Image 1 (tube, helix red, strand yellow):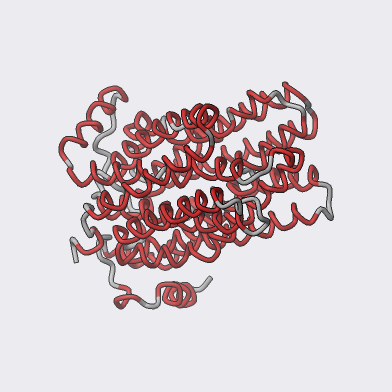
Image 2: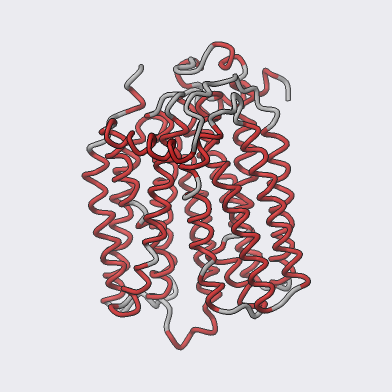
Length: 437
């Protein structure tokens, strides 16, 4: 694509904000920003589409159920995916900081995710039962670890190649594109015109190809060599990174806010269980299909808007999303008490509202962390934050015990309280988009 065209597209997406002034990247990076901006959108869009095509909560759960895998393996899908993607980051960040150009680490991680998705598809076509479940679970574990490498390096590369005023727009645009594709995928699954197993296995192969293509494109980014300080022994790095909590009050407040907002990630399965009549257990996949469509639809209509707002004030985005999540969860309880939650319109409506909040949380916290940190601390802040949140998500599995003994409505009530507490926590954050203006 010609340089003039790239600049025109970037101006259209960013509304030509502030004359394309680069706030916190060097002049050499600023000259390459338009091309890098579009490469970020394209690579991240491919990755987000792939995420939707292999969604462990929905797609892989249905796949393993169809293949006859044991229930305990199916129950491990989400914990393995979440813990594997977040927990290793505190230990890998130090080694990754030794790379002057971290785009290569992201590209390798993306390629490994693609190969893992292809392995899942092959297992689905050739294996059954426990064997299929274990192979797919193992491939998901490898995928999650590779994703952790991508996660800890992406924000750093984004911070070096795209200016502060346009990062949220890049990630928000990619989220919108990804959501549109996943929405179409969910619609295809719901129509029943094609055998679902064929759609799912084809989707897994497609996810693999998209991740590999994203890896190849990402290597063409014009990334300036960065600081390599901080690399070293993982155990020492673990201690050093945790010391950042004592040194940086804003980092503590950010992690508190993000920790409370894991309610938006944990709530959907409990909402679906609460809104599904026990007599309809055999039709559960239909209910989960609505969750796919609600999630993708929410991302489609809100991601770009959240991204643009995050470029102006990620703090306000986190405040608004915490309030929106509280309202969606409170509405779920109100509909349940009134006996309306099992109506055909009710569950999709509240799930849609929660997923809009969830999209805002993801974009708001990502943009806030990148803009809050410096080039030297960005990788460490990302790794520390993600490791703590990963631990909290694993501990969040305890909500399943609460649901078993006290009911899904009690869990949703607790998650609503967490979302409400996130509002004052987010108010305490600094306006990081304006600190260096």
